[in-house]
Length: 129
Picture 1 (cartoon, helix red, strand yellow):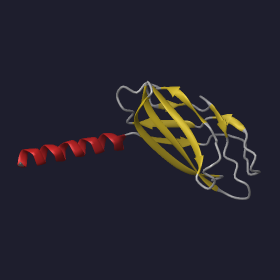
Picture 2 (tube, rainbow, N blue to C red; picture 1 turned 90 degrees about the horizontal axis):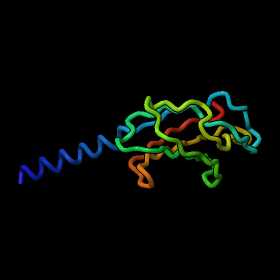
Picture 3 (spheres, rainbow, N blue to C red; picture 1 turned 135 degrees about the vertical axis):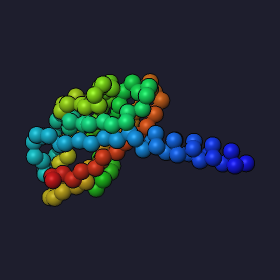
Picture 4 (cartoon, rainbow, N blue to C red; picture 1 turned 30 degrees about the horizontal axis):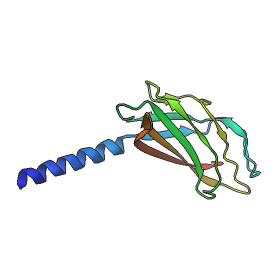
């Protein structure tokens, strides 16, 4: 029983560590300032990916305004870069553009092997900052 418990604990820890390793960060870049509520179509932010799961072929990105979650800002799907850095403008999306103030936006990145999701990472920032 002790061996089973130790093995189960080790598997749980390694599964949790693997899921926690995939992270993203981003910088809005030089997108046109927008606070009118009418977003522009702009190039994607520069992203830094860490802990991309083995076997990942593409990363799918989606942007959500947490203050207006029903609005579709879009996103894009890109092939995995070797160094984990994606430059500004690798896909187009509808920019953040909160009317009358600042909103919190969240990028979700889903690592995929073909159509199968392997891991998900999220990063939040205010706009305008």
